[in-house]
Length: 511
Ligand SMILES: Cc1cc2nc3c(=O)[nH]c(=O)nc-3n(C[C@H](O)[C@H](O)[C@H](O)COP(=O)(O)OP(=O)(O)OC[C@H]3O[C@@H](n4cnc5c(N)ncnc54)[C@H](O)[C@@H]3O)c2cc1C
Image 1 (tube, rainbow, N blue to C red):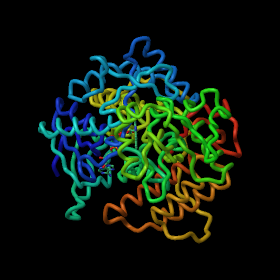
Image 2: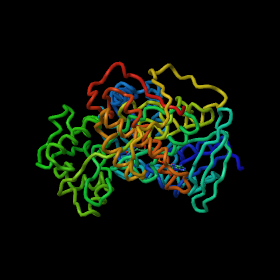
Image 3: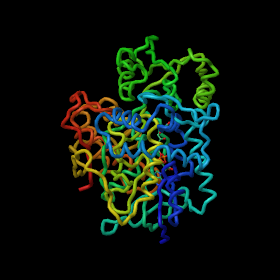
């Protein structure tokens, strides 16, 4: 068995950035299940939030994040995020990420629920692609070993310490083991749980499944963010239309042409994501339509093409000139706020096992992630994960309360159709999606449990991914059942109010 100081699973921003830092401390291996640039990161459009502009302060950024988090944010983690932001942006600039500038100064955009313009971007709306390309180039120039098409299938744990990773070489079908002093999950999110998602096909919840099976604690899984505006056109994937488009003045209209957001929130189109998402859903129901429209035709065409070249091109390729016509949009699953529970140094409840990026959960996003905070979170907490002295325990404060639950699949005995990712995605979208209720959540959890019990031993990438999706889907449904209130992205018709009794995290663990 080959051994390394760091075995990192995943090659999005979290995997690549962690690897570049970790190489200063020892040998590094990256395992990634597709090509190195298969990830969500390269699709990020809006940018990265950091309080570096005139009139902005880490304190303002702190409060915007905490308010968006709807009372559930881990404030210690938020404080770390906003305080270390400027240094991490400087690191990225030094690595070569070409942030856009105006007259020699970094250009800062405004996005919903940010008090001031504070979003750095690159290539207009191609921020993620620039980051992925830049970090990938640095990796190729380094001595870091990268194994593409290696799917991590298990974490090896001995005496409660993570010791290595089992992986399937998907090009030969052989299994291999890699030993490591630090095992880092950087496997991204789980948007593929849902029928409509902005996420790329790698986002199948593998990190959560790997950690859960290894015995780690999983937190806040009921808190899944749906983006209000993804393209809704027959035969076209739900491509994201960034928040920044509304930040630049985009207006939402229903299919009858009526601008509806002022009816729902004083912040109108710039209300928090969950509010805009639910408002769109209600308007779609009211007008018996599967879409609403985002209108930017009042902006100067050169502003649109300069600021949103990527979105403009995508729409033109699909027959829509957004300088002249409105964009058909609807909500889509976007970001997993929950994940593998970590301390503020990225370490999970298993010693030596770290989780960074979207798969990790410090609790900082609370019940609703503030736009453009996730790329920043990756930078800040990946650096801390590499800096953590493995022999010392963290010094985290007490934080919010937790409701811990041991869980096993349970089923009601009725027959269910065969498990497939399409069936799971439809079930999750209908019953564990934007608007939830106890009875349908319970049925969904039962169905997913039945699938889990009947799944065959996985043998290839797609069957492993189906296993991960089914397990992750069950955790989302169970956590959503447990949280008997509505808060941020979690909305239940049977418990529509936010309750002070639920200012706590739901933590799940294998029995
Ligand atoms: C369309 C879109 C736009 C976004 N825009 C923004 C934005 O403007 N600003 C912002 O802050 N955030 C944005 N986000 C969110 C942000 O992009 C992600 O949260 C972030 O990129 C996640 O990075 P990551 O490295 O954790 O995961 P990813 O970039 O998804 O990388 C995960 C990696 O893990 C690998 N992997 C997964 N499972 C396994 C396994 N079992 N074995 C081996 N490898 C595995 C994958 O192949 C991949 O390489 C956006 C997200 C999307 C989808």
